[in-house]
Picture 1 (cartoon, rainbow, N blue to C red):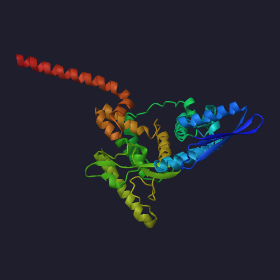
Picture 2 (picture 1 turned 90 degrees about the vertical axis):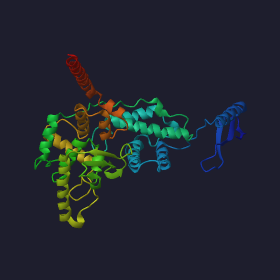
Picture 3 (picture 1 turned 180 degrees about the vertical axis):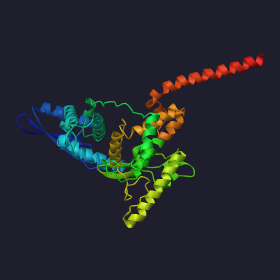
Picture 4 (picture 1 turned 60 degrees about the horizontal axis):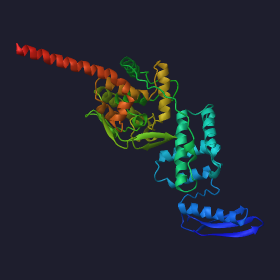
Length: 400
């Protein structure tokens, strides 16, 4: 590394030194004005050269947080899924830019982040009054941390200021699983001719809705996986469906992407659900013939009356309206928990339950549903005791 020093006036010096080469491989130099005597100027120049030689030099220049995010999205475009990139861009536009975008990277502090987090929790919603959930703000914090970590690697900053910030802690919400009686009541209601008629949520004439609810109950699919099912994924004779994709929604736009584990899985379904699918298929064919070319045939099992895919947010809103009308205390995602809980309570092994749910490992299933296991453990102990007692009785009779 090279550097030079020149006198500008009384107790005023200019130092010029080479910076690490840019991304384009070209030579870069930095000029600074140092106030003081020549000895102080020499010491400053020496300090800069040593810092650069050690690889600890950072030079964010005039870059702002906004600039950094744009650069991050551009450099990671090929590594981010389309839905992920759009979600990051939405967070940047609606939240990062307004609160942090204009701040220079060199001036960004932990306090800036803490103030932004507090504001988002209080009044961070875009289309309505109110704040964002602690969990959402935690996601934003993790994204900021990731982007700032990249800035450290790029030598734009020397430290990640997000390390010094404690993000909001999400409020834990207990999982709600319906009882066998509640499930039976829900299915009975959905089987009624008017079971899908809902004043809110846009499903007043959507025949797919009750079928999707039943499928969620009988398979434990995630919402995106449920709405991503196509007729080609259904094996009626074999009594199974294949989970190959997930329908996701970002900013009102619907995308098809891989499953959460990036693997497909086969789920067995009972004859009742096979029959429900067959009836639904006939109804969908009737709609297709009635609309002709106006029907959008993307092959989705759960489609709107014109064949277009059902947006996940719309499905959630309609389910919320239905559960409220039926006085059922649960969310749409709780149907997945219901499926898992009832499986485990019925004696199905955690390995089989994990496979149906699409968990990356059986350990995840055990962690999530540990509350179900104590009763099962007691039942197992009783069954084992009865087994041994029965064997002992047989042995005694044989001895006689």
